[in-house]
Length: 236
Image 1 (cartoon, rainbow, N blue to C red):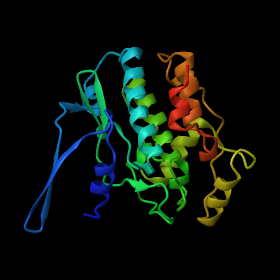
Image 2 (image 1 turned 180 degrees about the vertical axis):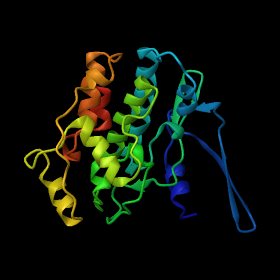
Image 3 (image 1 turned 90 degrees about the vertical axis):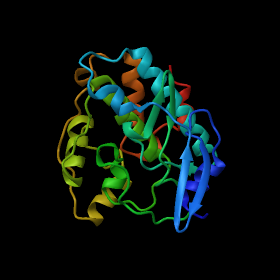
Image 4 (image 1 turned 60 degrees about the vertical axis):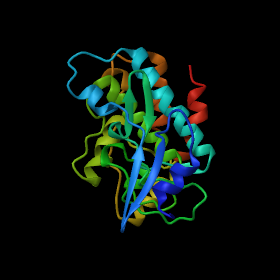
C-alpha cells in the first residue's frame, strides 16, 4: 500500500482531482477503480480546426489550478502535468494519473526523468535533483498556451532541443535572472543558446493580455519567481 499513487490519492479529496473508488488486489496485481470521465483535455483539442473560446480555456485552467493548489497545500506535487492527464466530462476538469506524484516534503534527490518532455520545467531539463511544486506551474503555463494554439508551445525532439525551444520563445535567461540555472548548466557542461524573447502575444494572438501575463509569470525560468497555484488563482 506504500505505492505512491495510492498514498497520494488516498489523501487527496477534491472536486478537481480524480477520485479513487477502490483498490482491488488479485494475486500479485493491484487494480485501481477510478471515477469515469469521458475524455482528456488533449482529445478536446486534437482535432479542432477553430480556436477554443477563451472562456473555456479559463475554465480548464482555473479548475486545474484549484486541484493543484489543494494538492500542493496537502504536500504533494504532480510532476507529470500534460493535457492527457487532465480529464474532462462536460464542463468539469480533474487532474489524473498520480504515478509520479511526490510528497513536497520528501527528500531530494528526485529523478531528473519526469514528465513528458514538452511540459518539462527548465530546472528538470538541466538535471536539478531538488526541484519542487513550481515545476507543476511551469507545466500549467505550457498547457495553457497549447489550449490557445491547439499545438504544443515547446515541441522539443530531445532534452537539448527542449531547452533550445524554450529559450527560443522565452529568450535565454541571464545570470542575474537565474544564477541557480547557470550553476546547473555548468555542472552538465551545457551553455544556454543566445535567444532574445519572442513576445507571447505574437505567438498566441488569440489570448487576452491578462492570459499572456499569467502565462509569462508561470513560465519564468527561475522556479522561485513563479507564482504558486493559489497566487495564480488570484490573477485577473
